[in-house]
Image (tube, rainbow, N blue to C red; front, side):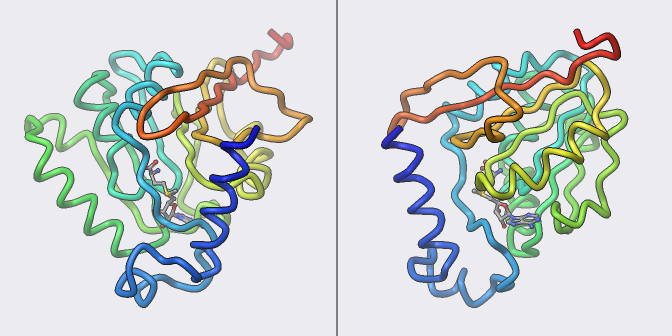
Length: 198
Ligand SMILES: C[S@@+](CC[C@H](N)C(=O)[O-])C[C@H]1O[C@@H](n2cnc3c(N)ncnc32)[C@H](O)[C@@H]1O
């Protein structure tokens, strides 16, 4: 219990602008961004995609994608056919471009990746109907705001994985794992149920 609280406090302090990653980052960030940029440790990225059981040919979206590392790993290491990352901050989209350049991807893998600027809370750029896996590293309040959109938009069998934060008492995770990296990270998995409540 103590770790997530520490993480929430850390993210909240950074979100309040008291401890931005750098002064330059703070200057560039739109004040409406309520979740600051904290990249997921590579070991946790791999564990999230494994927990979601990303398969060859699937489509993975990361809402609030930072430097794009999750969808890049989905395409490169898990053979996803499509990865879409959405981030509010144009600086992060520049980071995504750099990450793609550094990832030594094939032409096909590069073509499989798209990064878009957008506010995931407004949901305007997001159509979930063909999405197999959604990954999140946001905040508890943002997860709760996204929950109805995910439940309504995702197809049965689609999976949602969240780093550090759950979806609240009324959407209990199907699985939860702890991953040891620079600290103990908790990752959560939900599977969208079928029409018969399966
Ligand atoms: C904690 S970081 C996670 C980055 C990446 N998903 C990862 O796990 O490495 C959260 C990211 O969400 C972005 N973000 C915050 N609020 C957002 C919003 N309303 N819409 C889209 N992106 C947002 C931030 O710019 C930041 O890059």
